[in-house]
Length: 419
Image (cartoon, rainbow, N blue to C red; front, side, top):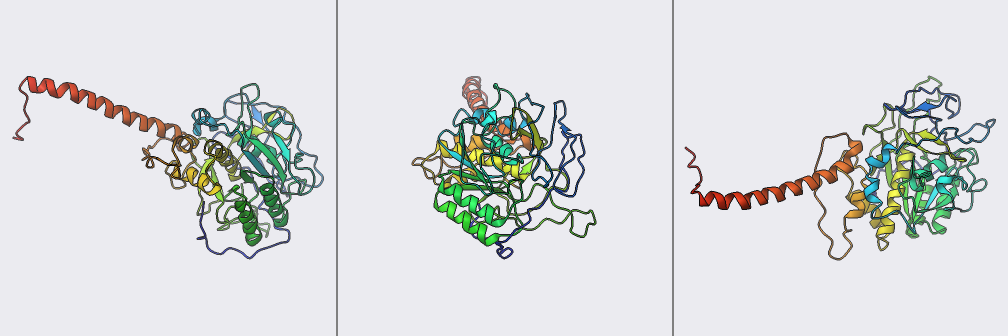
């Protein structure tokens, strides 16, 4: 979470602002299909296959005018997603599941009838249609990553499976977004009493209007989480076929007080060509992740910082449920202060829940994390094991000394003279 230290960005824009469009699907080692570009942010129809898993269709971010709304996937992932282990969610859920906290999903809408979210979606206003109807699918996918429940106890699951979801459409029906639509949706989410506001789009412009909308949400004690950059960069306008350079900042992720997030994949690395920006607050799983489609029981697969931000939004709900006395700013600090050390600190939900906040009476000093060199995707789990292992080693060494030293003295042992 940043204070007012970021350089002044582009001037405000109240008219339509183009959201960076995907030029290609970002892939990691678990994706085998290469999906080609079309004129709009549309992916090829062929599904992607995760290694050793079922084929899943690829998540869309925007539809062209002539396309039908995204349908139900015919494929269901039943294996536990890699994100559960990477984030240590099984341990985190022993402390919090997000009960009583509402996550506003400001995106393409949220499918209220999706089984993973059934009974927990409330529509709030709309940008262009009903918030609980999702033609594109991106908003539903993000909501499921943040707060989805597994189907019959298996398959993809959200970070905060007991949290409520406020569906706030921040785009047009087919995914196009403007600054005014997005800013208005952030304000609506705050007025609806969201404890956490997830914002899916990352815009090149609109600094002033989106910063004001974020400040309004902060005044309502809502914690805003957004991607630090778009999921992929557009092609240059000169039709050269080359990918455009990343901008130094995107909005609302660069606004003061927003938790900005970038992604990493199952191997702990980012895909080649992923947009690089500075000043990112947290990294979280976002590459090659599986989640719910906008209707039905099937699953899709997607990649990008917007999906990483959904995981952080879920973690924020866990923290706000466990420590309800914390303000939005304090909850954000709890997440960043307990993150696993890296160039961009990595989200560690269990550490955020197990560490007493500084604002609590009798808080313990911040723990010193054990630095490890294993793949970063397992960092939170390994971090806990490393700390536990060090503690066990101290106990064993102490016990050994307690037994050995008295016996040595009884046998007349003495220190070596160094000769």
